[in-house]
Length: 317
Image (tube, rainbow, N blue to C red; front, side):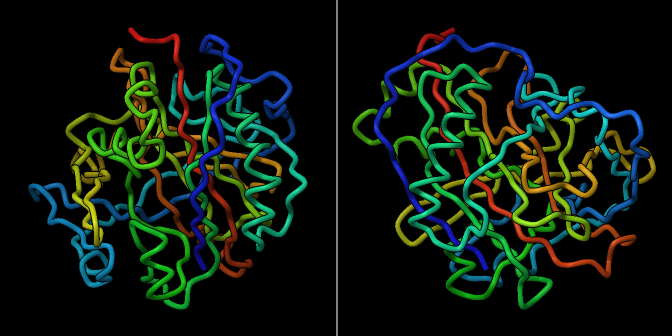
Protein backbone atom coordinates (compact mmCIF):
# COMPACT_ATOMS: atom_id res chain seq x y z
CA UNK A 1 0.00 0.00 0.00
CA UNK A 2 1.07 3.61 -0.34
CA UNK A 3 1.28 6.14 2.45
CA UNK A 4 2.05 9.81 1.98
CA UNK A 5 2.57 12.26 4.85
CA UNK A 6 3.17 16.00 4.75
CA UNK A 7 5.91 17.58 6.85
CA UNK A 8 7.50 21.05 7.18
CA UNK A 9 10.33 21.41 9.73
CA UNK A 10 11.69 24.81 10.65
CA UNK A 11 14.34 26.58 8.61
CA UNK A 12 17.81 25.23 9.27
CA UNK A 13 20.28 27.73 10.64
CA UNK A 14 23.47 26.52 8.99
CA UNK A 15 24.61 26.94 5.40
CA UNK A 16 27.35 25.52 3.25
CA UNK A 17 28.15 26.30 -0.38
CA UNK A 18 27.01 23.66 -2.84
CA UNK A 19 29.82 21.34 -3.88
CA UNK A 20 30.10 19.00 -6.85
CA UNK A 21 31.64 15.86 -5.45
CA UNK A 22 30.44 12.42 -4.36
CA UNK A 23 30.00 11.62 -0.69
CA UNK A 24 33.03 10.41 1.22
CA UNK A 25 31.92 8.44 4.25
CA UNK A 26 28.54 7.63 2.72
CA UNK A 27 29.73 6.52 -0.71
CA UNK A 28 29.44 2.76 -1.37
CA UNK A 29 32.80 1.10 -1.63
CA UNK A 30 33.97 -0.16 -5.00
CA UNK A 31 34.30 -3.94 -5.07
CA UNK A 32 36.33 -6.12 -7.42
CA UNK A 33 34.70 -9.54 -7.06
CA UNK A 34 31.18 -8.61 -8.13
CA UNK A 35 29.90 -9.99 -11.44
CA UNK A 36 27.51 -7.50 -12.99
CA UNK A 37 23.88 -8.64 -13.25
CA UNK A 38 23.02 -6.78 -16.43
CA UNK A 39 19.50 -7.68 -17.53
CA UNK A 40 16.83 -6.72 -20.03
CA UNK A 41 13.66 -5.12 -18.73
CA UNK A 42 10.43 -3.82 -20.22
CA UNK A 43 9.80 -0.08 -19.91
CA UNK A 44 6.51 1.65 -20.64
CA UNK A 45 7.10 4.94 -22.45
CA UNK A 46 4.69 7.49 -23.83
CA UNK A 47 4.28 6.63 -27.54
CA UNK A 48 6.82 8.37 -29.72
CA UNK A 49 4.29 9.40 -32.38
CA UNK A 50 1.77 11.05 -30.05
CA UNK A 51 1.51 14.72 -29.20
CA UNK A 52 0.66 16.44 -25.92
CA UNK A 53 -0.72 13.95 -23.37
CA UNK A 54 -4.26 14.25 -22.08
CA UNK A 55 -4.62 15.71 -18.57
CA UNK A 56 -4.75 13.16 -15.75
CA UNK A 57 -7.43 13.35 -13.07
CA UNK A 58 -5.67 11.71 -10.14
CA UNK A 59 -8.98 10.86 -8.44
CA UNK A 60 -10.20 8.87 -11.46
CA UNK A 61 -8.02 5.77 -11.99
CA UNK A 62 -9.43 5.28 -15.50
CA UNK A 63 -7.69 8.47 -16.60
CA UNK A 64 -4.23 7.00 -16.03
CA UNK A 65 -4.63 3.21 -15.98
CA UNK A 66 -5.57 3.18 -19.65
CA UNK A 67 -3.39 5.97 -21.00
CA UNK A 68 -1.33 5.04 -24.08
CA UNK A 69 2.06 3.39 -23.76
CA UNK A 70 4.87 2.08 -25.92
CA UNK A 71 6.78 -0.79 -24.35
CA UNK A 72 10.49 -1.20 -25.09
CA UNK A 73 12.70 -4.07 -23.91
CA UNK A 74 16.02 -2.47 -22.98
CA UNK A 75 19.32 -3.30 -21.36
CA UNK A 76 19.57 -2.31 -17.69
CA UNK A 77 23.14 -2.19 -16.39
CA UNK A 78 24.02 -3.18 -12.83
CA UNK A 79 26.11 -0.44 -11.20
CA UNK A 80 27.34 -2.53 -8.26
CA UNK A 81 31.09 -2.14 -7.95
CA UNK A 82 31.10 1.17 -9.85
CA UNK A 83 28.61 3.23 -7.87
CA UNK A 84 31.06 6.11 -7.59
CA UNK A 85 30.92 6.59 -11.38
CA UNK A 86 27.56 8.32 -10.92
CA UNK A 87 26.60 11.48 -9.02
CA UNK A 88 23.74 13.93 -8.71
CA UNK A 89 25.68 16.54 -10.68
CA UNK A 90 26.78 14.32 -13.56
CA UNK A 91 24.21 11.59 -14.18
CA UNK A 92 21.48 13.02 -11.95
CA UNK A 93 21.51 10.10 -9.51
CA UNK A 94 23.79 8.75 -6.82
CA UNK A 95 24.02 5.71 -4.53
CA UNK A 96 25.04 6.17 -0.90
CA UNK A 97 25.34 3.91 2.13
CA UNK A 98 23.24 5.02 5.07
CA UNK A 99 22.05 3.13 8.13
CA UNK A 100 18.80 4.16 9.82
CA UNK A 101 17.21 3.37 13.14
CA UNK A 102 13.87 3.01 11.32
CA UNK A 103 13.43 -0.58 10.08
CA UNK A 104 9.76 -1.41 9.48
CA UNK A 105 8.36 1.86 8.07
CA UNK A 106 4.84 1.12 9.28
CA UNK A 107 4.25 3.96 11.75
CA UNK A 108 3.99 7.44 10.24
CA UNK A 109 4.79 9.25 13.46
CA UNK A 110 7.95 7.20 13.93
CA UNK A 111 8.99 7.91 10.35
CA UNK A 112 8.50 11.65 10.82
CA UNK A 113 10.22 11.72 14.20
CA UNK A 114 13.22 9.48 13.49
CA UNK A 115 13.68 9.08 9.75
CA UNK A 116 13.02 12.58 8.43
CA UNK A 117 15.84 14.25 10.41
CA UNK A 118 18.28 11.53 9.34
CA UNK A 119 17.52 12.12 5.66
CA UNK A 120 17.53 15.91 5.97
CA UNK A 121 21.00 15.77 7.49
CA UNK A 122 22.24 13.32 4.87
CA UNK A 123 21.01 15.45 1.96
CA UNK A 124 22.55 18.55 3.51
CA UNK A 125 25.88 16.78 3.87
CA UNK A 126 25.88 15.50 0.31
CA UNK A 127 24.72 18.69 -1.41
CA UNK A 128 25.93 21.49 0.82
CA UNK A 129 22.40 22.90 0.86
CA UNK A 130 21.49 25.71 3.25
CA UNK A 131 18.09 24.18 3.99
CA UNK A 132 16.42 20.82 3.38
CA UNK A 133 12.74 20.15 4.05
CA UNK A 134 10.96 16.87 3.49
CA UNK A 135 7.49 17.53 2.18
CA UNK A 136 6.20 13.96 1.91
CA UNK A 137 7.03 10.28 1.96
CA UNK A 138 5.59 7.26 0.16
CA UNK A 139 5.66 3.62 1.20
CA UNK A 140 5.30 1.15 -1.63
CA UNK A 141 4.18 -2.41 -1.04
CA UNK A 142 2.66 -5.04 -3.26
CA UNK A 143 -0.53 -4.01 -5.03
CA UNK A 144 -3.69 -6.08 -5.41
CA UNK A 145 -3.59 -5.41 -9.12
CA UNK A 146 -0.47 -5.41 -11.31
CA UNK A 147 -1.98 -2.48 -13.24
CA UNK A 148 -2.39 -0.40 -10.12
CA UNK A 149 -0.36 2.76 -10.56
CA UNK A 150 -0.87 6.41 -9.89
CA UNK A 151 0.69 9.82 -10.20
CA UNK A 152 -0.41 10.49 -6.63
CA UNK A 153 -0.25 8.16 -3.63
CA UNK A 154 -3.24 9.76 -1.90
CA UNK A 155 -5.39 8.95 -4.90
CA UNK A 156 -4.01 5.42 -4.99
CA UNK A 157 -4.72 4.96 -1.29
CA UNK A 158 -8.32 5.99 -1.88
CA UNK A 159 -8.83 3.48 -4.69
CA UNK A 160 -6.54 0.43 -4.32
CA UNK A 161 -3.21 -0.70 -3.02
CA UNK A 162 -0.26 0.66 -4.94
CA UNK A 163 2.79 -1.26 -5.99
CA UNK A 164 5.83 -0.16 -8.00
CA UNK A 165 5.10 2.33 -10.78
CA UNK A 166 5.93 0.74 -14.13
CA UNK A 167 5.89 3.81 -16.35
CA UNK A 168 8.82 6.01 -17.32
CA UNK A 169 8.29 9.40 -15.70
CA UNK A 170 9.69 12.34 -13.73
CA UNK A 171 7.64 13.35 -10.71
CA UNK A 172 7.58 17.12 -11.30
CA UNK A 173 7.53 19.19 -14.47
CA UNK A 174 9.67 22.33 -14.62
CA UNK A 175 6.65 24.58 -14.18
CA UNK A 176 5.05 22.56 -11.40
CA UNK A 177 8.13 22.17 -9.16
CA UNK A 178 8.19 25.75 -7.76
CA UNK A 179 4.50 25.42 -6.89
CA UNK A 180 5.43 22.58 -4.52
CA UNK A 181 7.38 25.14 -2.48
CA UNK A 182 4.54 27.65 -2.65
CA UNK A 183 2.11 25.05 -1.29
CA UNK A 184 4.31 23.76 1.51
CA UNK A 185 6.18 26.94 2.50
CA UNK A 186 3.71 29.70 1.55
CA UNK A 187 5.09 32.38 3.85
CA UNK A 188 8.70 31.90 2.75
CA UNK A 189 8.27 30.62 -0.79
CA UNK A 190 9.54 33.56 -2.81
CA UNK A 191 12.57 34.02 -0.55
CA UNK A 192 13.39 30.30 -0.77
CA UNK A 193 12.94 30.28 -4.54
CA UNK A 194 15.32 33.23 -5.00
CA UNK A 195 18.26 30.81 -4.86
CA UNK A 196 18.93 27.45 -6.42
CA UNK A 197 16.15 24.99 -5.64
CA UNK A 198 16.01 21.22 -6.12
CA UNK A 199 13.62 18.37 -5.44
CA UNK A 200 15.59 15.21 -4.63
CA UNK A 201 14.03 11.80 -4.12
CA UNK A 202 15.77 9.62 -1.52
CA UNK A 203 14.72 6.02 -2.23
CA UNK A 204 15.40 3.08 0.10
CA UNK A 205 14.53 -0.63 0.03
CA UNK A 206 12.73 -1.78 3.17
CA UNK A 207 13.85 -5.33 2.37
CA UNK A 208 16.48 -6.52 -0.15
CA UNK A 209 15.12 -6.04 -3.66
CA UNK A 210 15.48 -8.56 -6.46
CA UNK A 211 12.22 -8.88 -8.37
CA UNK A 212 10.97 -5.31 -8.86
CA UNK A 213 13.94 -2.94 -8.71
CA UNK A 214 13.86 0.75 -9.50
CA UNK A 215 15.84 1.76 -12.58
CA UNK A 216 17.03 5.25 -13.49
CA UNK A 217 18.19 6.84 -16.73
CA UNK A 218 21.52 8.63 -16.95
CA UNK A 219 20.23 12.16 -17.55
CA UNK A 220 23.07 12.78 -20.02
CA UNK A 221 21.42 10.33 -22.42
CA UNK A 222 18.06 12.13 -22.59
CA UNK A 223 16.96 15.02 -24.78
CA UNK A 224 14.57 17.79 -23.79
CA UNK A 225 12.22 16.61 -26.55
CA UNK A 226 11.81 13.26 -24.77
CA UNK A 227 10.00 14.90 -21.84
CA UNK A 228 6.27 15.46 -22.28
CA UNK A 229 4.51 17.58 -19.61
CA UNK A 230 1.34 16.06 -18.16
CA UNK A 231 -1.23 18.19 -16.36
CA UNK A 232 -2.38 16.57 -13.11
CA UNK A 233 -5.84 17.57 -11.93
CA UNK A 234 -6.57 17.46 -8.19
CA UNK A 235 -9.85 18.37 -6.49
CA UNK A 236 -8.58 21.84 -5.51
CA UNK A 237 -5.54 22.50 -7.70
CA UNK A 238 -3.54 21.43 -10.73
CA UNK A 239 0.06 20.27 -10.93
CA UNK A 240 2.29 18.58 -13.46
CA UNK A 241 4.80 15.84 -14.14
CA UNK A 242 6.71 14.52 -17.14
CA UNK A 243 5.89 11.39 -19.04
CA UNK A 244 8.76 10.28 -21.26
CA UNK A 245 9.08 9.29 -24.92
CA UNK A 246 11.68 6.70 -25.99
CA UNK A 247 13.23 9.36 -28.23
CA UNK A 248 14.61 7.05 -30.89
CA UNK A 249 13.22 4.25 -33.09
CA UNK A 250 13.24 0.76 -31.63
CA UNK A 251 16.72 -0.71 -31.75
CA UNK A 252 18.35 2.74 -31.76
CA UNK A 253 17.50 3.81 -28.20
CA UNK A 254 19.95 6.19 -26.54
CA UNK A 255 18.57 6.14 -22.98
CA UNK A 256 21.02 4.34 -20.69
CA UNK A 257 19.26 2.52 -17.86
CA UNK A 258 20.89 1.53 -14.54
CA UNK A 259 19.94 -0.27 -11.34
CA UNK A 260 21.63 -1.84 -8.32
CA UNK A 261 21.24 -5.61 -8.25
CA UNK A 262 20.16 -6.98 -4.87
CA UNK A 263 19.81 -3.47 -3.44
CA UNK A 264 19.92 -3.62 0.38
CA UNK A 265 18.09 -1.42 2.92
CA UNK A 266 21.26 0.55 3.71
CA UNK A 267 21.89 1.28 0.00
CA UNK A 268 20.05 4.47 -0.85
CA UNK A 269 19.37 5.76 -4.31
CA UNK A 270 19.14 9.54 -4.58
CA UNK A 271 17.96 11.14 -7.79
CA UNK A 272 16.84 14.54 -9.03
CA UNK A 273 13.19 15.24 -9.69
CA UNK A 274 13.93 18.91 -10.37
CA UNK A 275 16.78 21.41 -10.42
CA UNK A 276 16.35 25.11 -11.12
CA UNK A 277 19.86 25.30 -12.60
CA UNK A 278 19.85 25.58 -16.40
CA UNK A 279 23.60 25.46 -17.04
CA UNK A 280 23.70 21.95 -18.48
CA UNK A 281 23.62 19.95 -15.26
CA UNK A 282 20.87 17.31 -14.95
CA UNK A 283 17.49 18.80 -14.10
CA UNK A 284 15.49 15.59 -13.63
CA UNK A 285 15.93 11.83 -13.99
CA UNK A 286 13.46 9.55 -15.79
CA UNK A 287 12.83 6.46 -13.72
CA UNK A 288 10.61 3.39 -13.57
CA UNK A 289 10.20 0.08 -11.83
CA UNK A 290 10.77 -3.01 -13.94
CA UNK A 291 10.46 -6.74 -13.38
CA UNK A 292 13.71 -8.69 -13.39
CA UNK A 293 12.49 -11.92 -15.00
CA UNK A 294 15.51 -13.78 -13.65
CA UNK A 295 14.18 -13.07 -10.14
CA UNK A 296 10.45 -13.43 -10.87
CA UNK A 297 9.95 -15.91 -8.05
CA UNK A 298 11.42 -13.66 -5.39
CA UNK A 299 9.52 -11.61 -2.82
CA UNK A 300 7.73 -8.53 -4.10
CA UNK A 301 9.31 -5.16 -3.48
CA UNK A 302 8.86 -2.97 -0.41
CA UNK A 303 10.41 0.48 -0.49
CA UNK A 304 10.19 3.95 1.00
CA UNK A 305 10.90 7.24 -0.70
CA UNK A 306 11.05 10.77 0.66
CA UNK A 307 10.94 13.87 -1.50
CA UNK A 308 13.19 16.62 -0.28
CA UNK A 309 12.93 20.32 -1.03
CA UNK A 310 16.58 21.39 -1.22
CA UNK A 311 17.55 25.06 -1.09
CA UNK A 312 20.86 26.82 -1.80
CA UNK A 313 20.37 30.38 -0.55
CA UNK A 314 23.77 31.67 -1.69
CA UNK A 315 23.51 30.26 -5.22
CA UNK A 316 21.48 32.90 -7.02
CA UNK A 317 23.13 32.81 -10.46
